[in-house]
Image (cartoon, rainbow, N blue to C red; front, side, top):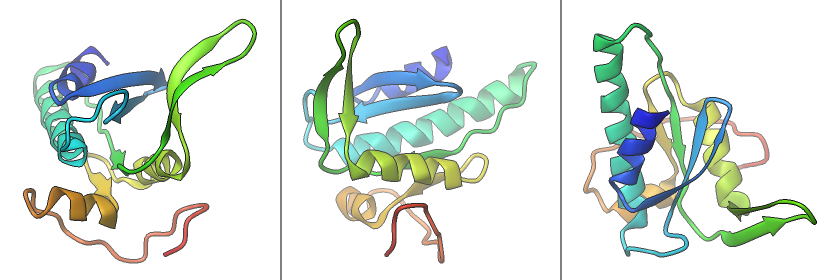
Length: 137
């Protein structure tokens, strides 16, 4: 996780939490840098490259999949009487999680909105017929 956190941190990101073997990273909150979708995609590419290097030089061969869905979320402290945590909520967070689950090993899945926001600065390949729980197109 240290190597992956190092990669996402290069792109104006906050690591929200580690959930099992997942990293939940936030781009644009609590502060937007104006190019949050591009930062997220560049971060994902950087993570894949770093993981490939670790796989080539290390003892363990781990393949990751990444899902990204920048957009409007609610950001802030979620709290109970005895615990609080800064996080983000709403459909875009759920979409990112579904895309992550659907990503093949060493792939990055992004949605159409993310493609629009990165404005052809990074080459993307469309995929067809992706069914995600709770989402329809």
